[in-house]
Image (cartoon, rainbow, N blue to C red):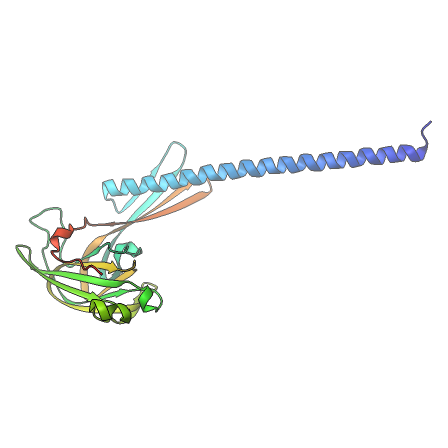
Amino acid sequence: MIGKSQNGQVLLIIVLIMVVGLTVGLSLASRSIVSLRTSEEEITSQQALSAAEAGIEQASKTNTAIANGSFLNSATYNTSITTVSGNSFLLNGGNSVLKDDAADVWLSDYSTDSAKIYKNPWSGNLTILWGKGSAGCTQAALEIIVISGIKAAPITRKYAFDPCITRSSTNNFTAPSAGGSFGGKNFPFGAIIPISSGLIVRVVPLYSEALVGVSADSVLPSQGFIVTSVGTSGTASRKVTVFQGYPTLPSEYFPYGIFSP
């Protein structure tokens, strides 16, 4: 015959087993809910990203300043297009220009019509700013090629600047002047280029990639567009920003314009 004390012990063991079982069950349920919620968030986040990318594509096709749209899965996008122009701006949409790659500064009007391109050439002082930090020999040198005059008989002038004294003693590049800042960016190096009847300028970083800014003493023409698209799905929101510059001129247009450091 089982005594009262033994009955109490058995009851206590059963209660403990139930508590442990309930704890394990709740833990598994909680993990399942979290996993399901995470999966749903990943799906809605991916849908929002896809919607934002679709907004970029739509804006590129229609060239509409503001465009909105939606999809069957209830995802939506909202896009806007901003023209890059004015007295100062960052090249390549604020992204670094890769080593030995090129970014163009349009000094004249761009047009897909061959009869209208290179109209209204620009004259003034163009300041090219570049670099991050202050260590000269870890920074890029710049090759700057200026095309001026008229389309039928362009004039080419080439400049080369290097903040690294060790390199410039052998490559004979010019030392840059002090830089400046705008748009929340600080540039340790600068180069002032006087231009008369300018058509286009090509900037090529050498030795390293470079963040490059342009400042002018009068307004420059359009350089392209920054397209921003925000996609939304449920509570998820994703933002995509793309710079759409004008087609880059082939390197053959700049004869003997590439240095070989």
